[in-house]
Length: 159
Image (spheres, one colour):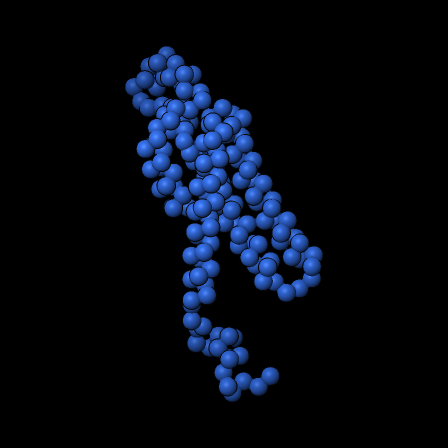
């Protein structure tokens, strides 16, 4: 999540694209003395930080990572077919949740469609990087002394 947060923040600051509701936000800030003295953040977002959508990138990173973990576990699972199918359905449902979050950003007029697509792409990339790092670290760990893996691999163990 830190990866996607930092990347989204730097891209937002670098691009500085106005939101679709930029004119309305500026008008509300100009009409309200309390908001004019403070920041537009009190309205739920800054008017010039539209690209990429942070909601979309964070949702895709979180739900995408979860889907990769569930899908990877299902692929390695030996057991009934229904259990693997259920895991696949859970992975697809989590991806549907990430897509739903992005669609609400467009529907509520906080982001342009390409803001959301860029957020999804950034989130998916960070989810894949996080999953690759997690799965590599899990395979590189040596077995703990006295663990089941070590006991099964010892020459004295009789099956």
